[in-house]
Image (cartoon, rainbow, N blue to C red):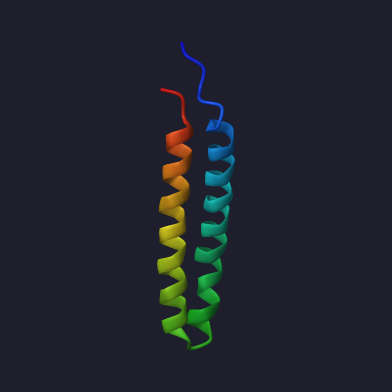
Length: 65
């Protein structure tokens, strides 16, 4: 079994941080829909999904093979 690259722990931490931000964005977007600002809510969901994909890719990339 080979040891992961030295940068893997940092990539994993950043990926998890991005996933946390994505969760906050997606959960809080409901407030925009409730205040009749659906356009902002849709934009926030889109940004949340992009951030979630980026975070997921970083976490996956940091996993040992």
